[in-house]
Amino acid sequence: MGRVLLGANWRPNFDTRVVNRELEIIKQDLHCNTVRICGLDIERLMVASEDALKQRLEVWLSPEMWDRSQEETLRYITKAAEAAEDLRQRWPEQLTFSLGSESTLFMQGIVEGNNFFERMNNPSFWENVKAGKHNKPLNAFLAKGNEAVRQKFHGKVTYFSVPFETVDWSILDFVGVDLYRDARIKDMYGDLVKRFLVYNKPVVIGEFGCCTYQGAEKLGGIGFAVMFGMMADYLDLNLSLPKAFAEIIKIPPKVDGHYVRDEGLQARELTDQLSILDASGVYGAFVFTFVSQTSPYNEDPKYDSDMASYSLVKSYAEKETVEQMMRQTARQGKELLGVDIDPKALAKTAGAVGKHGATYLDMPWEPKESFRAVADYYAKQ
Image (cartoon, rainbow, N blue to C red; front, side, top):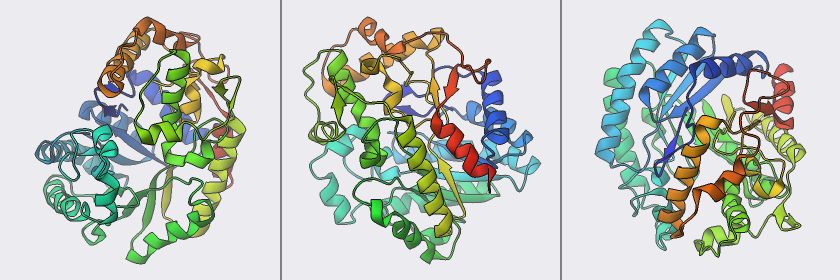
């Protein structure tokens, strides 16, 4: 519903008609019984959650305020919990509340850095994580958050961790973990999942998925980083990328100077991971993600930002969102990479503006092969 990172809203255009239709498709055509609803704006979250609940989908509500202080974040999730309680009273068995997701990465005050990129690029980040220095402040925050939220929200509560976080799950109703498969853990993915079963609580995978280009299966949860490589190519910029990203973008193969779109690979990766998760005994798993407005599809592979997306559908740029997307990207280029990017040059990535899909004529997107693969998998369950 609009995660917001460094001032960039991942869902610039919030249209309740489109949201309603997407939820209907998620339930009826993808054969899902549950949806995880993430984002910053509480009003948006409540509107989407109520719509999903009316359609008899279970909702795992994930309010997310990123890159703010612990005090501000605590006030925010408490406010969201109070709003969610009204929905829970009307649908008491269908709503679960999340205290946050991957807070070591996305919240200030656990490791050094004012924002996500500062934390990830800090030379001491992995040293501190390996030493476990993040776990004590993380659990202190979760304890405060759990206590504050349960005073307002009287349903089940969880948190979605990143695997290197050691969480005190005793205070929560579910074990939640975002777990992407990549080349390093391909052969042990199922065993990693099973490690979370030792807490004797239902385990839910909050995110797993794969991007849409050859080599994406090697990168898993950091597959989005090739967008930096694409920008360097199509803007002809000599970007001074952080070392981590500079190394990542060299991994996927390129043909004629660009990455290679591969919807079949994404589809196979998702169904393979679903089968492993099924066999491991998890309570549930959420495919990341359904739609990505800010990564529009382009027939020219040089500008096809959907390749760097995890979405099950390829989006077509909408007229009312293009200018906002360009401003967001230009601002982030300046703040993160120190380069001035002409928003007009970025407009090349928009592709066919205003186009609608052939499968769903009323939607500004078209299902990928992964959509059909996930739908077929779920339909057999």
